[in-house]
Length: 202
Image 1 (cartoon, one colour):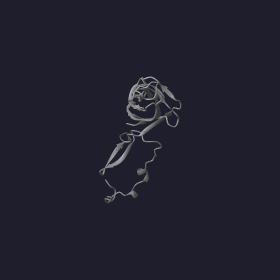
Image 2: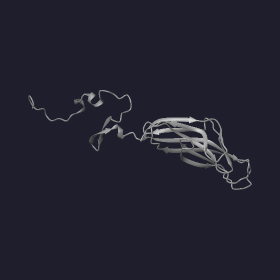
Image 3: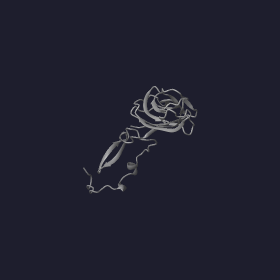
Image 4: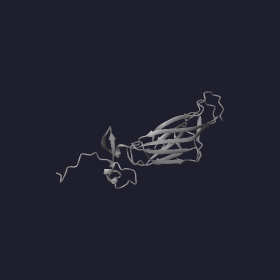
């Protein structure tokens, strides 16, 4: 119902709107919550989009640590290299990207045995926990008359995207072990021996 003449049909233009309608009365001062909504155009059709549907893969937190003391292992069972770090995921759906770098030395154990080499592995938890990655380092000698003093230096790096599926504090550890007529040392210094943990949103 109109009092007087019916207004003529007219397209709405920007000048017809109060700017507050478009810009909003309140500005966000932090990142959007999952229940916040965006207005988007989907092939010309306006739709609402929950913030929870975007932003996957975002880095939520970063933890880094280093180790500067040399650690040796003369056995063939894994022992900690001293390089470890812990992170507490904010959601059980989060993933953890683990990046490590360490200088590993293998050296003769006093015999002329062949097959000399060492092992390095990444574990979730301690070295008795879940093994995530493993690599072999050293010279892997095949001659039975190899010098007892042979030494090899190896810069070892791991990159692993883990799914711990927990919000409990989770530790990641680099372990070292001999793998045949070989002793192993982690020649740590604070610049070269690092472990970095990144929590990645699902």
